[in-house]
Length: 457
Image 1 (cartoon, one colour):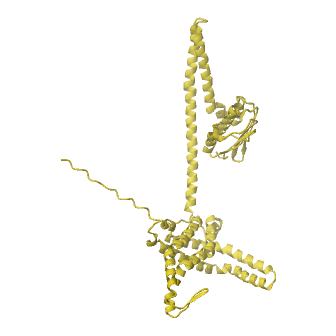
Image 2: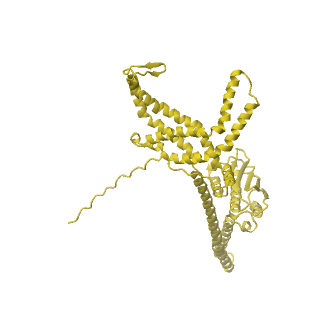
Image 3: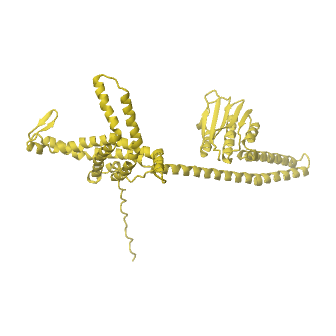
């Protein structure tokens, strides 16, 4: 008697815990979670921190504040600003730029710690500055992280502090005030809501209901304000994203270089196999057919058949040589683009005028890509453009190799029309380059390839 297999059930996979107020807002359990209280604590502490930082910066901003008062008095009196006002403005800005970044560094460190209330930890990006106070100051004043922190501090004491205070006042503050209005009137106070006044507890019951509704809804705008604050803080205070992006770009560049090298090695292997293998076998076959044709009776069917096979073999050998030459001609490997491009132009079906201005040999992958661009462009012109002449130019513009073809054909080249332009753009993109195409109906058609070519390459 066989036992029946037991049924097993896989427990449902729990959703990942929200990491930001915006993620928490999307959950049904948001009002019952800790996120409303965390967001409220973050906004309330923002108001306190903004006031403290403003007080710490008062010695630097006092001339600016005094300037505002003086300007107001002068406007009221009808007089014009004087050099004294300009001096006050310059002094205030100078003090703020000199000492503000020094205050911003510890403020940013504290803000990263406070940000953990509603956001995953963020990482600062200051460079090490050992070697004394002067070196520390020089490093801090010359790195971008310090000035981003300074910008964040200015936004904190002006925009962010104002927004946080306004959201708290219009939601939690208004809700608490309205909810407490019956108790206040019961104690003999008067509740003033311009233009109305209430001194009867019964008349303030609707206000209490409105206050309760506001309090129940307030977690949502509070969480949104907290999320907006943290999003800005991450942009200015978190350098981890910048470092990760920079490292990813470096890795992409390296992997692309490895891919190009792998393509180059595979191309050379195919070229070698075709040249040393298939081509030599075809040449041997053609020689044997030629010898057999010499032994055949003149004018016989065998002699005519062998002559036909011999001619076809020579055509195949010629085609194979063109294929091998098109993959990577020997002249390109030996002498570079200054010799390979004129040789390519001589074999073109359309007359080509070439101008090659290259003062040095270029990296192999750059030369291979440039040759491919020129060969494919001339092939497209011969097949589709109905052109009578072509100009081919190759020159270095700084660290960029420019390969350009211009023909007098009918124009109207379409990358989506199967003319190989898309594959050409992809080939150039592999080495970090790009293709520009101008081909109005009626011509002329101009194709320009820009290929990065660092001098160290």
